[in-house]
Length: 568
Image (tube, rainbow, N blue to C red; front, side):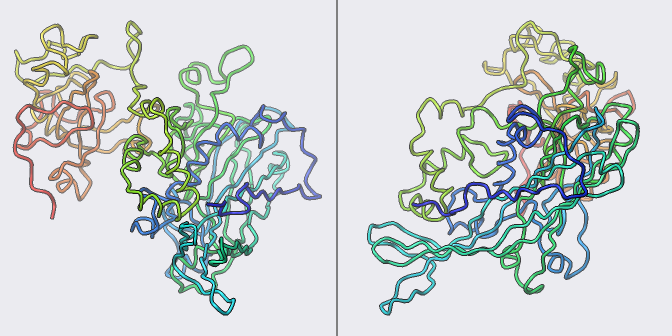
């Protein structure tokens, strides 16, 4: 199948500095720094964001979930978005909006520092199949099969767009904002089909948009930078359905920010002295995270002492995405290629794709060129590549390495003399103090009861029914957990994982659906060191009678109580 998009190489609308802008310092050599070339360090993650949800398994047009597309970072014309009132502001771009705003902190390391921004998005392109008529004309059809057996389907594709902006930071701090057009032109291209069966016509409508950069100095070397991208176009019909409004939208919009002589501060885990200004940054419909390796001084030390050395709270790049990510996100090295479902489980999707029938694979190939690439890659995948997809453990430490910092997390049943050793910790061979067989051995689950087992947290034994305060870790925690910090919760169960760690299943006390979540086993999971007991030291309250399902890899009781009936 020929390439669907003639402009499939990224269409770049390079923006030159205006006459009133000061001359920028010379940028780094290609690929050597955090300027536009340095953005390639984040290219794999940025592309995963760009094509998130572009086309989902089973990659066929007939699949219902591929009929409702473009769910993240969608910037539509303002008159269409606000036809029923202003949009509700959120921290991610899972809701339609007409703008996207990133605010971040950066350290200005030299007077001639410059900021470089790359705005990326998709522009929709309607692929219309037209059959040839006896009079030489053409008529639109949903699908067409050429004489050589190749199928052609009418479908919406997308063209990737990028615009680079660069401005001297001193100019922004003088109170001058920098605005540039980041829109894309409309167009039409026609491709004849073999044997005169018909043609494919691809049409794009113009996308009008602009990005504005402003900055405020907070201290001698500390700056708050704002990058705001807006859809400045108008809808042909504010009452039109969403699929029509998407013709003039920016889709999967995200921003890469770098520069010369600057370093960006983590907004997820800032240094202590910058916690307040970091908390005052307001990003709307996007979520900025650090990219690139942690920065260090030329003498090998970090700019912020031990805090920086322990994980890195500054970086040379920033990725502001419409989905919530951790600092320094990476693509798993085992992944052989994009499956258009960020956070995807490659092995499962690959196995499912292998099981598609020949007819289903043919439809997927006819749906979209990127779907055809996925099918071809799976069909030709070498066994050794597929074998690498069968899981990878990155959280374990080598044998003999020091234990991670933090309070101990002993666990064990509330009654003495149970299957656990006195401290409840697993030995390095997977057993517990020599008294308990490893989880893969017979009897490894004997005596475990998630609703009655307890774990010591700050000297208090916590288990099912205990009240706790949530204190998620600054680093290494799920990105969603930060929004639960300081919330009161109730423990439902204690689970002992196969790697020797412990997790507690909790429900939020102020969640009106907490009882419903507990009924069918939907919980939040935290480590003991991420909790602060609120229950009196004498022990947990009487646990609920039913045991909820645990997280993947957790031990379950050998004979759990009967599970509740599924929700109607």
